Length: 110
Length: 114
Image (cartoon, rainbow over all chains, first blue to last red; front, side):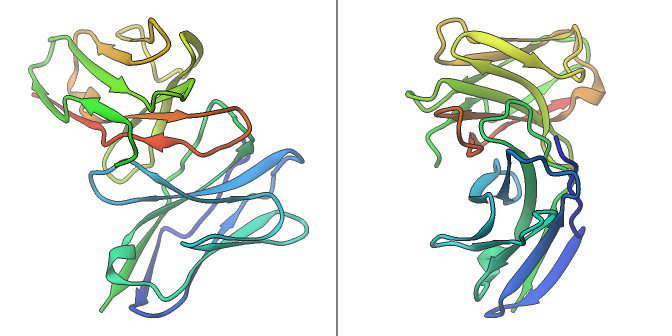
């Protein structure tokens, strides 16, 4: 599985847009990019998945440049409840072994 | 609530004892995963089932660890002769098909080994 690198932590004020970037230089042709969110004492929760360009759902947007060596998770107008750890994962669809890494701890400040 | 349940939610045991955890995935999901998570780290993959077949095991899964999914529905993870280093959150996840990386995680079982 392609290794990912993301910032250890980020702070943001309520109402701001937050962009978390993940580097995955060794991404393979058939790899997808997936983001999860985890609150303390809970299991991770799937946020969004994409292959190229832009994907948007009701929670977030995922921007993937043409070379696919990085991706950016965008959270619009964050609230205190968005304080969590965000994980970027890279792998082919339905891959069996998943590597989460240490994630990005987002702290939303009132 | 994702629909994946785990039991118990918390387990405290003494070193050397055996423990068993149960995971009930979403009923139509044929893929089931076990992970271990320690404080400040992301979940670490332990093992994966497709239906009742255990298809992959991590090197983290020592011979003291065993997992089963006898009828392709619920799964159990057993740890024999527990050690203090086994203290962690044990997470179970399930997914419906092979073309997605979306896994549905349970709430986890927190194990404390004294």
